[in-house]
Length: 329
Image 1 (cartoon, rainbow, N blue to C red):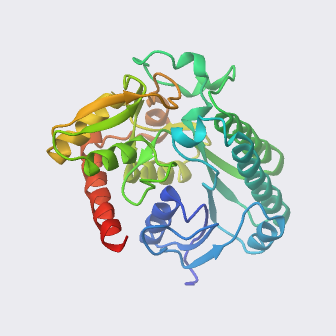
Image 2 (tube, helix red, strand yellow):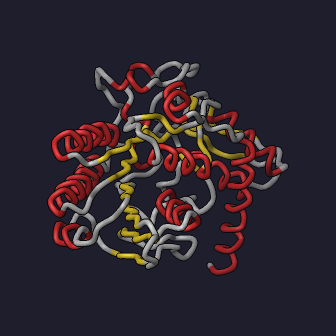
Image 3 (cartoon, rainbow, N blue to C red):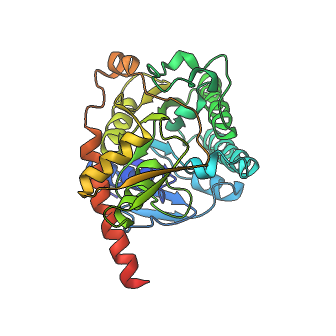
């Protein structure tokens, strides 16, 4: 490692956002250590050093912080799309695994004296369910997280961990920055198997469908969301870490669409004429959208890339994955 290089730790470096973050930090000249239960699924890791280890293991985390880091990024969590989070079948694992990781990182990071500055990835799932029942949701401003009433145990754990990180910031002087992600998507993300999110799932369904065929959408498809392309997410994270603002702050798009509209967008990109069949399935809230006044005020920046362009890149990547799987499978 060069003497003047900043040293970063990325926890969750084998996941979608984490693996992209490693590449971004490397482009900026950082020396990067990644850690995760798995290597990135779709491309070799760009990390200088990668630990394939379990952050729930106290001995591993203690050893991890025997080194000092200029910056740490904590994205490791037990999570997935609506088919994983909202069925209720994984609640105990989601809460236990994610909370254990965050408790270990903060405890051993603080105890070692080698944790100076850390980013924590929270989620729009922290916002109360009852204010997200209108598909025309005007946007979730950060202060609306309280009084707390998230729609899932995943959201409750994220809200608890936000408070955990700020507690360590107050009591131990660790510099903490927290962002609430709103549906991050893009190439090299999970696209099949049950943990994929709506953009990837829809792209896969459209890509696999024959022209004049049918794709399935859970519920009536009128539920609304905003989706943020991965490059914009990383830009927001880096700007937040370079600022004096701790957060929490939304990192998301204000371009809200219904799931039906998202499906039609994918059809247009594919050049396919398809029909939609609505079927029962886990839905989450009826309307969720990012409110970006605070990030604009504090960072002088807001996401601006179009959803269509991000979906086009994602669709192209997923079609290549399907083709590759068909050949190798």
